[in-house]
Each structure stands twice: as structure tokens, then as C-alpha cells.
Image (cartoon, rainbow, N blue to C red; front, top):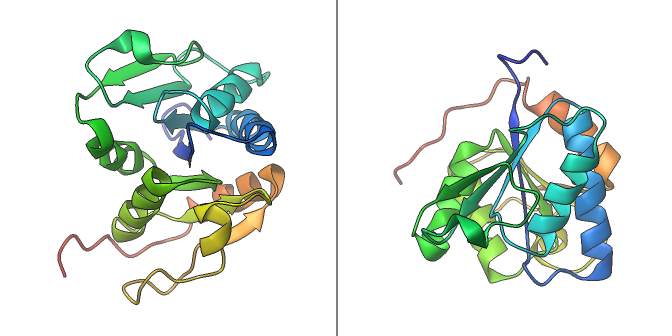
Length: 182
């Protein structure tokens, strides 16, 4: 991807990540940046921190590759790997900003907040890819259509490298525009 066409991948998951989810998120962040994506997360700990750390460890990392959309107005809440903190003051409402910013969404594990992000991504027509073998909403929804407004399904579950390869294909595929009404 050229600088002008670099895509943004959201990496979503729980602030209370397991060791396995942490490792998967770090590998995913690194692989995403290595493949030319920038990443956006909720900017806090758990999966978000691990993905940001992994992105920073990529040999193709450049400043600005790690975006954190924060629930508060306080940039100091961002994990130490975030390059661009976006302070929203929206609490859980920031989930919409995370997925709307991205071209596609990777899901690692996930609890209720992650479930809301998956539903929002689905409604916005963003591809959703479950990554890893752990528990959580990503794994539970893998292979499922959330409703009948789309013809695809939540992809996966895939390992991080497979997920990024699929993402690279999906961002280039034509998609129907999102419907923001019933």
C-alpha cells in the first residue's frame, strides 16, 4: 500500500485480556503494520495495549501508525504505545469512533464492549475478522451472520497472519455502502 492509500485496521478486545489474547493481539498488531496497515484501538490496556505494542515492534512501524480513541478527555489515559491519542469524552460511545475510523475490524476475544463494537462495525458495513482461539465474542460469532442486512459473515477464527492476509484482500474487494437506517 502506498502512503496515500494506507488502510486502518481496528483491533478490538477486552481491557482484561488473557495471556493468550495478549500474545495474539501483539502478533496481530505487528503483522498488520508489517502488511501496511495503521491500527486503531480503544487506546487503553489489555488487547488494546498488546496490539499497540505489537504494532510498534514491526520493522515497518512509523510514527503515527498507532491510533488510540480514548473514552476520556485525558490523553494521559492512553497506553504508552499510542502515537495519536484521540480524546473523546464519550465513554463507551467511543466504540463507534473506533470502528467508524477503520476500514475493517479484527476481534481478539472480547466482552460486552467488544460486542457493541462488532455490532456497530456490522451496521457500518465493515468486514469483521475473529482472530485467535480463545473465548469471547470474536470466537463466538465467527462464521455467523449477525443479521440479514449483509450477505457475508464474521470471518474466522484465524491466526494473526491468516487474518491480516484476509484483511488485505477484503479492503480491496468492492462492498455495498453501509445503510445507516432500517
